[in-house]
Image 1: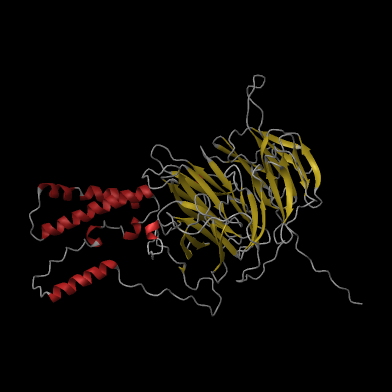
Image 2: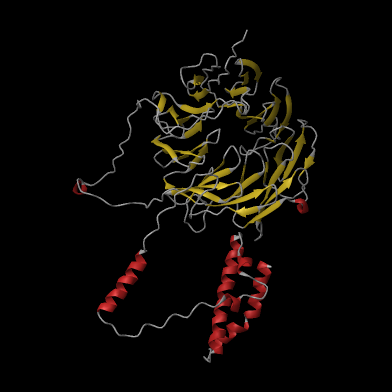
Length: 599
């Protein structure tokens, strides 16, 4: 007799909520009601909460104890009496829980006690305590298999293996490492080390294969003249990393956000500067979960967003718009571009498959947080305190732009944090991306008017004023990643420029007036590169990612071109002035300086 097999159903993701009324849970799609199985904590001192990356555990602190719950049965397994804990972090598999609290000294304990502690999650056993005074970069960094972990200690980096925190397995021997980043992959592990510059020397970002940390063993190296800190963005496979340098104050005064540049390095030793198509700050960078592409949002508003492949080659341009963040869905088939903070909260959802089409756009005004649901079909936005104390609450949306649930907070209450429950990889399967908008609900809170203010005398009249000229999306590498038989329609050719139209009109007017005057003598052509480039140096040699070096090369290039022009004039019989002759005499000195920079 044949037996019926039961179809496996996907779990319902839950939403953890922390605020002035304590800790509680809501069910995710499709019901959204309050969850009665999850833990509740009415304390108004719930300062932090987190899920383990694999979804096995949930932990929070309430200024009395740290509580750990096994998510499968929502069973309390540990209470750790650490009342001053402010931050929590699980290791990738949830085996270890790290806690951080403010470092203090007292008359009885003038040297202070360890303020960063590592516990075994299932038993609550304290494995090791460290002193780490800063609240940024305080946690141990782990590989995904938890075989290797590392920590900063002053200007040194120590590594431990197999969870043995009492024995240092390896130490980075490079002096004055300001920060490091361990790849999330399993073996072979890789590490990026950032060494700040000093006394006119450039800063360096060096990639090593663990545990080979001699300078001669670096897999790749990048130098930066303008870098006060370095942020690393690894892909999920740990095969490539993006290095973003940042200077807090832009000396040119052009940007409030400081100055950033983005560089690409992979574990094969390839490196390059990520070519950005617009001047301005880099707002957001994110790799696709499949590690085959990444997206960058950058440039003065309206900002550009560009997709790059795994070789850092631009393949698709989303055009320009009011956006400053990018979020890939957990399955990588959808992508959100949004504009929060001082922007109006516009959300664009794009299909990242071969279609590269915009699926929807909607407004999530006053949002301070956005996150994809683990099912890859829904996302949540929230307005939280202390960033905004009015209109606190969260909403759940379908990717088609329909709002499916809204939970506003009372004016007397504050919402501090919202988190989706995490799950092991491959828990949710990909689903076809539809273009039709699903049925949603109307917002309970009044929406701000989308009408642009116009003065009384201008009302009722047509206006063609545009604050910005927006660029349309386009494929940069037509046909890249498309299935057989699918083609990309190229953009129509642009018309003549405004300057060309003016020149043509001027010529036509001169012809009509019968102007018989001689045409002005053509301007002398620029010196042929062959006449000024030193022997053995090509135009290709002059290209560099180093901003300071590029500036010096540009100045030398201009001087050598001027000398080439003067020599041409002298050979044609023109009498040179004394200062021009002196300039030609310096040619050898300038050539030597240029060769020292490029060869």
